[in-house]
Amino acid sequence: MASWMEPVVYVLAALSILLALGGLKAFADTRSPGLLLSSIVSIVFSIIAIALPHWWPLVTGFVINIVLGRLFPRHA
Image 1: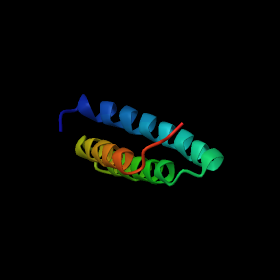
Image 2 (image 1 turned 90 degrees about the vertical axis):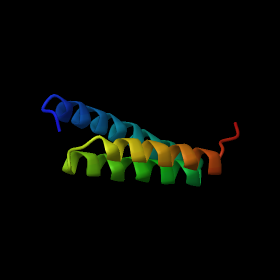
Image 3 (image 1 turned 45 degrees about the horizontal axis):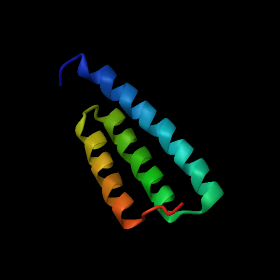
């Protein structure tokens, strides 16, 4: 992978983990199973992206979260 891409992957993965922690806080408030699953998926695939380091785990986690959003729609 190009040397300039690694810091980008690290920053995006860190932001994804930060957002997922916010999702876990929202899960604690709402008990929505979709939020829990989405947060876990984001954290796991972000850790994979940091460990490899490569961009495809971030994209895969995003796509899985899109599918989870369709399976567990949020009703306000």
